[in-house]
Each structure stands twice: as C-alpha cells, then as structure tokens.
Amino acid sequence: MAEPAQQVDRPLPEHTEVAVIGAGLAGLAAARRLNDAGRDVVVLEATDGVGGRVRSDLVKGYRLDRGFQVLLTAYPELGKQFDVNALDLRRFEPGALVWNGTKMHLVGDPTRRPRTLLKTGLAPVGSITDKVRLLRQRIRLGRTSAPALLRQEDLSTLEALKNDGFSQAMIDGFFRPFVGGIQLDPALATSRRMFDVVLKSLFAGAAAVPAGGMQAIPDQLAGRLPNGTVRLNARVGAVRPGEVALADGRTLTADRVVIAAEGPGAAKLLGLATVGSKSASCVWFGAPTPPITDRYIVVDGTGQGPALNIAVMTNVAPEYGPADSALIAAACPGVDDANLEPAVRKQLRGIWGPTVDSWSHLRTDAIAHGQPKQQPPFAPKQAVSLGDGMFVCGDHRDTASIQGALFSGRRCADAVRAGLG
Ligand SMILES: Cc1cc2nc3c(=O)[nH]c(=O)nc-3n(C[C@H](O)[C@H](O)[C@H](O)COP(=O)(O)OP(=O)(O)OC[C@H]3O[C@@H](n4cnc5c(N)ncnc54)[C@H](O)[C@@H]3O)c2cc1C
Image 1 (cartoon, rainbow, N blue to C red):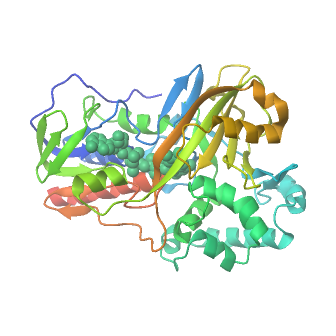
Image 2: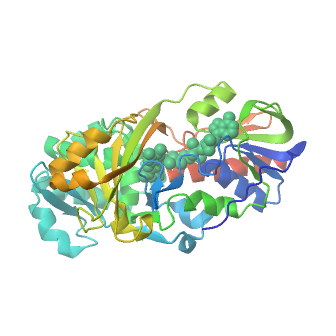
Image 3: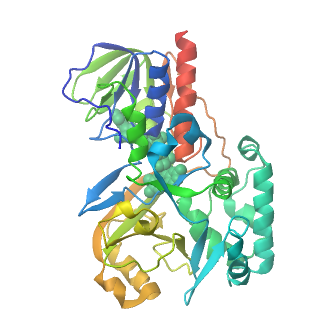
C-alpha cells in the first residue's frame, strides 16, 4: 500500500495558492489534479487519516472498513485517477444469494455466468416475468449513457420499479435489500437517476474491494502528493475568501479555497442549505469457518433485518483476515445504531444456525452521515464555484458514491485552474 503523503509536525505555510479542506476522496482528487497542474496546494484534514468515509482499520488481525463498502470497477473515474492494478482488487461474483426465510437462492447474472441461468430462472425470488424485466433493464441501461440516465424523468426508485412493472415480491425480496443496501436506502426513496447509474455500473463491471482494504483507495491518491501536502488533525473552524482559520487558532491565506468536507460539514462552513443524511451501520464478526464458501453478497429478502446485506469478506479477499478465519460484514443500511450486535447475531443465527454463537464480535460501525440524501428532484453536477475564489466539492455536489466524489473533486479542480489562469 502506498504511504500517504502527510506530515503533521511541519509548520503550516502562511500562504498557499489553493487550500483544500477535507482529505476525503473529493478533496484528494482535487488536490491531485491541481498538483499535477503545477499548483501549490495544502490539504487540511480534521481527523487523523486520509479517506473521509473510505477508511479501514486493523482490528485483532482483521481488516475492517468503516462500514461495508464496495468499489464498482465500472466507475469511469477509476481508470482516470488510479493505477488500478496497484489497488489489487478482489471481486465479488455478479448477482446475489437471496435468503427468503427458509433457503438461500441464487440470483446470478446469466449473461456473464451462463451456468447460473437455470438456478436464477428457478429461484423463487419474484416471478419469471420479473427476471425477464431485469434482463430488459440490463439491455436498456447498457445502451444508455450515464449522463442521459442522470437527465431522465425523475421519480423515486420505488415508483420507478413499480412503473417498470416489477412485482411487490421482487421489490421487497430483491431490490430493497440489494440496491437499498448499496444506496443506504431501504425505503427506496432515492432518485431513480441515481439508482439507474448504480445498476448500470453493477451490470457493466464487478463489485470489488482492494486486497489491502478500502483504505488503499485514498492512500493511493494521497501517496502521489508531495510530502507535507496533507496536514492531518487540522480541523478548519471558519473560511472566508482568501483565508482559512483552523479551530486551533492557526490561519492560512490562500488564493483559492476548496471546501471538500462532507455535505453537512460543508453546509455549516459555507452557510449553504443543509444536506440530508442517509445513515448506515455495520456489525463485523470473526469466525473460525465461513458460513458459505461463495463470493456472492447475501441479501436478506425477508424484511426482518436489521442486516440487509451480509458479505463473507475473506471469501472475496482472504487478506481481510488472519489465516484460517472468516470475516463477516453484516450491513444495516438506513440505521445509525452502535448497539445492533445482539439483533444482528439473532438474525444471522436464523440463517446459519447455532454456529453463529461461536463468532466473535469485532466492532459495530454506526455512521450518521453515510451518504447525502438524493431524492427527487435530484440534479447532479451542482455548481462548484461559489464566487470570490471559493469552491465546493464532494459527493453532495454530484452523485452519492465513490465515483461521484472523485468526479466532483476533478471537476472542481478544473474550475479552480480555469480561474487561476
Ligand atoms: C457505510 C457506507 C457505505 C458506502 N457504500 C458505498 C459503496 O458501496 N459504493 C460507493 O460508491 N459509495 C459508497 N459510499 C459513499 C462513499 O463512501 C462517499 O460518497 C464518498 O466517500 C464521499 O467522499 P467525499 O470526499 O465527498 O466526502 P468525505 O469522505 O466525507 O470526506 C470529507 C472529509 O472532510 C473532512 N472534514 C470535514 N469537515 C472538516 C473541517 N472542518 N476541517 C477539516 N476537514 C474536514 C472529513 O474529516 C473528511 O475526511 C458509502 C458510504 C458509507 C459511509
């Protein structure tokens, strides 16, 4: 894994061409683009590491991401901003194992894995008509560009699925846990524009994690910045054109200021309209043996949660756990609750039986702001230039995703560069 460029002991310069506030993916992408263009940049990050919402920790020999997250290999920014080979990606199988309360059923992607056709066709998850509709969606999304999908008529995901003719059983048993899990939105209230670009990416590539954990993503971006560019434990308390004031009293003048804080933080610093939050929790377990051997995400289609998605991370990336052990992530989208472990363990016992009692609880993540709410009317590509040399970027200006944050940072850097001449 690349060493992140960060130096906390060097004094802050009095002046920089561009001050970027926040070392999440958007801030790092903006800093990289500006640095590559020969601009002098300082990134001020409030916490003790880079990555923002994309971070990982080593706990008892297991690699735990902060909340269950995946990188979709079809994200266009991936090829533009990364050495993808160096991320050493480990891929999930396309599709999902759906738990219906009595049995696990495979809903695969027969267009990529023809051997899954029969099982997928026979799985009692929705009807045959639902599966034909899903195939039709795949064809439509494959033929439509992401920008066109982001301009189409806006509805909630739930309304869109109903309009497209999917049965309630398919919506509740498959879409709600699967896509609701990815969008941290079991109510399926998110804009169909977002839903369609996520589904397009899922169909076009794989869901993956770097062997070294999701942290490898921001680390690679930060590792390409000159040493000392990123200042950790540097919380910004106030901004105004040409000046940044840290919470500890230090100040820095800058020709341009880029606010790359998450939506609610950016709104507070800039006095902009508040950004609503979708929450997420994740309960992590270590086990002596994996409950399944496949590389599929398991979705609980019973609606009896709290976990909607379960992933045996070590089946996909053995590097996520010590030898002869399994790491299980139980993702509970839409919930911000650090005390979910007993309820999740009970739920998983209902699926895999008493063996679950031998699993050790490693950590529960409770994340109040997982993603910005992006319900209809949803307009991506919001203005990044605020005037007076002030700029803003992040997933709340584009799409609520890793792709959206990276794109937003790059787009914002181009706007900054245009202004600097
Ligand atoms: C549990 C979970 C699951 C997710 N699943 C997926 C997924 O599967 N696929 C996907 O594509 N996306 C997923 N996402 C969304 C994705 O992680 C985010 O959209 C993306 O990381 C946002 O990046 P960002 O740079 O816009 O914001 P952030 O990552 O929030 O970065 C903002 C940074 O600004 C810093 N900051 C804030 N205020 C200040 C201040 N005053 N001074 C200095 N620094 C400050 C913060 O500490 C932070 O480092 C998920 C998110 C979560 C939480």
